Picture 1 (cartoon, rainbow, N blue to C red):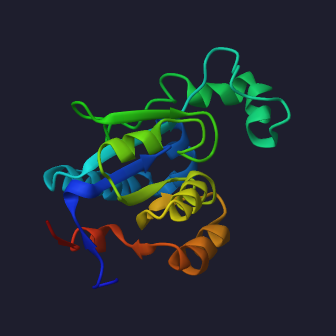
Picture 2 (picture 1 turned 90 degrees about the vertical axis):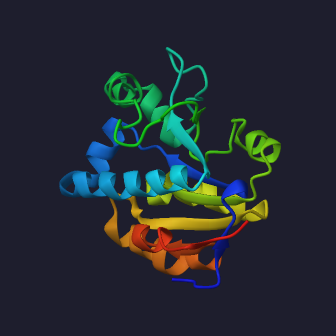
Length: 199
């Protein structure tokens, strides 16, 4: 844990990314209850500390007009009605253990990064948010893509490592242990709850 890292809640956004019911059930498997408990604990602490909570989800219009068949990842979803069900109700809903609650912001994206094609950057600028706390599914998907884009945009970053999940355990570990520390502060959920808050 980086004892030097400080968070000003007024300038911090916690991004819960792609934690939709169907995705959580596939990626967390036997750890689902524990994963949701950790993530819910992070969000509860963020709300109590007056940080901004933003939920990011994957979603499409009927027929997926946002997706090119040339896109290797999302083109496969467009070609498969079965896969599309994971982004429709009820599987496409954010897991109720995590929210959203009250007027929390929900951003729907059509690509891997939370920034691509969304108004996330505008919302962050409009609310003077310069620190992002990231977690979600998958580590090698939305977390990696969003982290790299946010790093290049000079945001201060935290990744909650045990609130991220990936089907490839080795890739998850490599990102968390080797790549992410060069761009962000990597913390456990328990360590995040101990961070010093400043005004």
